[in-house]
Amino acid sequence: MADGGASTIIMLVTALLISSAASAVLIQEWAATSRAIQQQQEGLQVSEQISIDFAGDPMMVELSTATNPNEIHFYLLNSGSHTLKHSNAGGDVYLTVFVQGVLLDETSIDADFVPLFNEDTNTFQTPTQWEPNVMMEISLSHTSFNDFSDQDNIKLYVTARSNEVSGLSMSTSMSEEVRLHEV
Image (cartoon, rainbow, N blue to C red; front, side, top):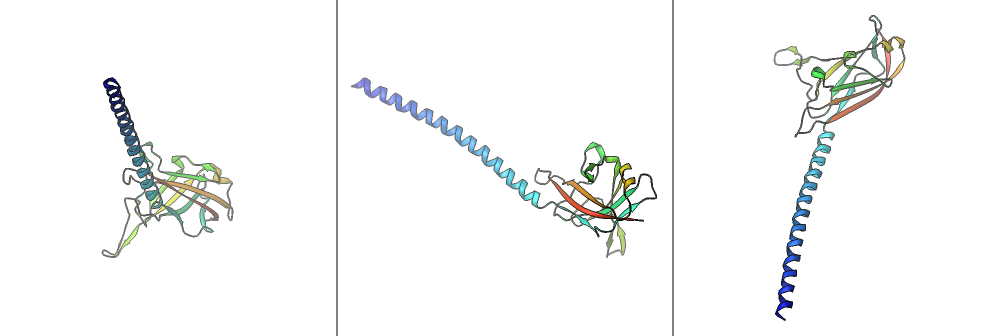
């Protein structure tokens, strides 16, 4: 009888050790899953706070035929609540532009800040970062634009990336059909 009780206790202790080890593994996995879900939720929240919009009249986008290749000029507004990256320097592409489905390389894209009026000094000041409510003039040049003429409708698709927010860098995009107006 004594042997039966001892073996039962050994089995009970073994079962408790195995179940506690399994519980520890499950708790660790649950913590990792919880962290991943939290990061995804933070990413979704940041993603909703990042956006760009076409600024201006989409039926009056400037087509400059005085240059070769032709140039297209339009404006983008940072309509989100976080600063966006604006420079393609250093090999990192922060602004990507497609015109009629054609991806433009970095050398075809020029982005300049639109000066803001400072009421305190009664002067215009050019921003240095693409902060919320700051507008950029986008100038595009590509040999395929030589086929465009006055009153042509074209499709623009632009993506931009944010600066890091809570350790995350998100992207946003804008798509607009525009009509070219030759100047």
